[in-house]
Image (cartoon, rainbow, N blue to C red):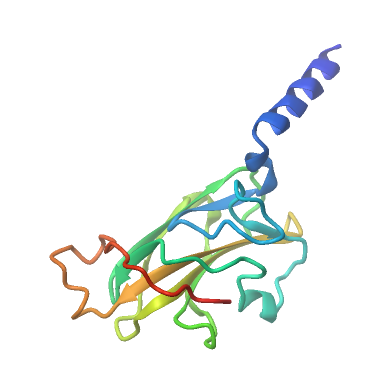
Amino acid sequence: MIKRIFWGAAAAAVALFPSLTSGHAILLFPTSRQTGTQMSFTDVGIKIATFPPTAAQLNSCLDSTPVAPQEAFVAGSDVTVKWSITIPHQNPPGVRVAVQYDPQSDFIVLQDNIDVNALSATLSLPADKSSDTAVLQWLWASQEDGGFYMACSDVMIKPAAAGNTGLSPQEPVSPSAATPAGC
């Protein structure tokens, strides 16, 4: 009887909160793309059932569709990336955050092997690179889970001189309309 109640409650939770069951870790900030054949509009992040990720997977946003920049930052500034764990797994090898400045370029790793339990990381953007259509890629590889979770966020990175709007370097700059980057 108790087992039946437990499994009934678990099934109800899955039905009521499907977005919480679709990914085991999700990117919260900056806002990630929410499109693609592997995710519905309510999902954030894509689980890939291969471990470790291939070089091609690490240099892509899989099938997510680019959108207009959701945030804007200043080159050389610090950016705090935030995420949530919806179903805990062992950490190794951890979270990786990378940036791509144009669709023809490879992703540049900003920080790797971040403890997923930290739920955020403050990263320094390169001071000499800017883009109206950059992509920030968040990836958590979980060896225990046998897969990895990925989210991409379309962002604008303004040149340091042009980005001087009176904001401190840590504050995002409001994005203007721009053509989205592609992966």
